[in-house]
Image (cartoon, rainbow, N blue to C red; front, side):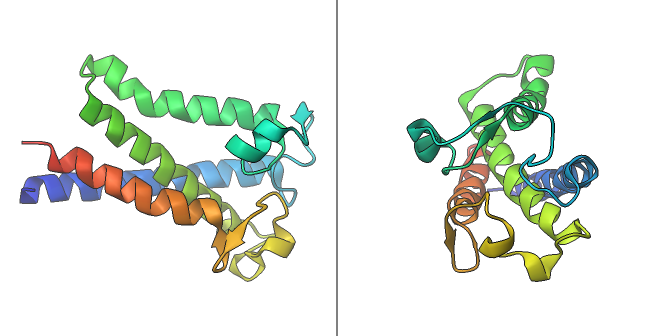
Length: 158
């Protein structure tokens, strides 16, 4: 991989983190101290076996259905706008989405005055059902997977 590709990847990762910061601040303003849209006036689906498989056992809310959809669309928009769709670009988008959600979720805890880093644990975040080594299991899955896919998307670039 060239130095230019490394720099481009670093800028992409920094941009993902900045986007995660801003979205975390937005969610903190919307949700306050009640994570996972607990107090929001939105529909909820709970206790369905498909949620256990695809959603980590969490409640599916209307808020999160729309939030996850709009973020996926925002990350895909540059491909549509530029007309430059490729598998390499799609892999980069998927990696970006994974890393975005991990960084946004972690920043939601750290920046939220009702939580902070000291309350980043399962007892205070019951919507994250499965924790490993002090973090939600999704962090341990999607962080390395996201970085690996990001690397692959840049390594394939000329």
